[in-house]
Image (cartoon, rainbow, N blue to C red; front, side, top):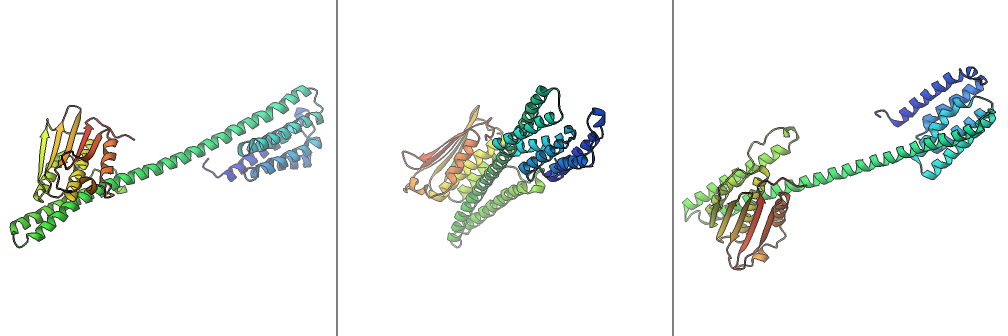
Length: 377
């Protein structure tokens, strides 16, 4: 309900009281003694006490049953005060343990039998059945409500936990994107700036070429960061990114940029190039970007081959570099998250990835992606 539980209890108590007062006026027509002032006062007290049933369910239930017993003992019509007792018993069953609620239901049934004896009923078997059936039904409804409340609370907790997991996964995805963008472009800029400084006076054309590569690389990094920030802004969620997502179509540009930086890279494309799903295309591009960044950082100057093979149902990619005389395993065990990120991306789109040293020296990264892959949870 949109109103607070305390206000709802007050409204329900007022409704019960009005019904009890109106029903008390019909006592004479039902063959019962008319209610006097004390009877009306007790009827009002019995029903209005339910306004506090959520704050102290057991206390209110015992008070209502005790007041109802006094009301019956004074010879008043028992039906007028029965609503308060049933409501209070239901509340105990819905909020307290089974042992406590069963005890309250048993007391309610006992008072029901006392009401039949006090009224001198000619059908005590019927009264006894009512004394068993009515509290049992009320208790059962209360237990069902209690179970439903617990299930709703558990569902809310699970939804909250799932939301936290989704936020954590989204943060991880953003971290991977930032790592791929910054690590690659900053590595290229670092190599090119070192080259420009080294040949600044001896070979001005090479220095100017390195500065041009730095300018183009920094511009591309800014475009990708701007696209990511555009997506992350809450007010721009319904819009389109200002720049297209990178894909294999831009792989040749990346290879040319690395080649201009002094890394001997050869690009080989087999099969008919075609447009891939955006997620698969981005996954392939990022894995190739990370693999080439690792070559640039850990095996500078190593001859490297980039292979792209378009098959009917998948695309195979590879980055293979020759040995530079160092220990490629040691070079790649520096605690970075590049290889882990590549595996996560491949797994997300149902692909397989194999990374490791080559038998003849060097290192290789091989990725196989189904072209019809969809992101998996």
